[in-house]
Length: 121
Image (tube, rainbow, N blue to C red; front, top):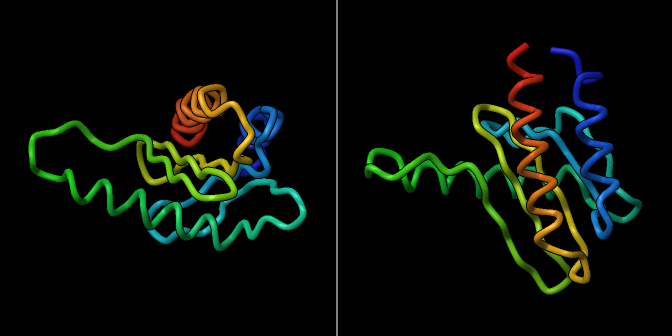
């Protein structure tokens, strides 16, 4: 799998107003596969945290008859982290508190669908 395939997906998300970082993350171990963050954003640490939350949300719903978790959002004092995915890769974004959360959520969800298609090819 070439990370070049993810470049346009990442650029689309990071181009959303208020987004300070967009990363493709391996859900299993929280490692960054590809991405871009603004100066001052600890990309690897945020990716590890987001992947851990995503894994825990998925495991909490395993076997209880609910649908698979595909989107998780964490709100903090200075902003939000959103992560979406379907399989072993997920797309996450770090957004400022002043960002339009709905616009960023939509961009990340669409990008996650494109990511699944790119990873599958």
